[in-house]
Length: 75
Image 1 (cartoon, rainbow, N blue to C red):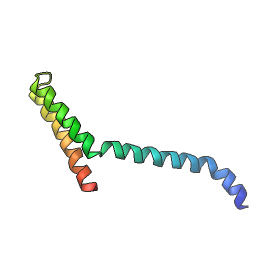
Image 2 (cartoon, rainbow, N blue to C red):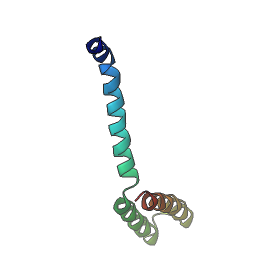
Image 3 (cartoon, rainbow, N blue to C red):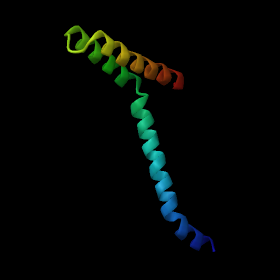
């Protein structure tokens, strides 16, 4: 009986495992403090060189700082 249950549920368990792995990698990339700091530095360079406006800079900076705060709270 248990073998039959395992065979029937194997595809579902595989999909659930894959979804968990994707979620972990997404969280790792989204909340990697060093990557966020690097992106903030790139953003500052773009603003200093005049490639983006102050409004664009402020909007992107707010998003990155919120992500950085969330990353630091998770640690």
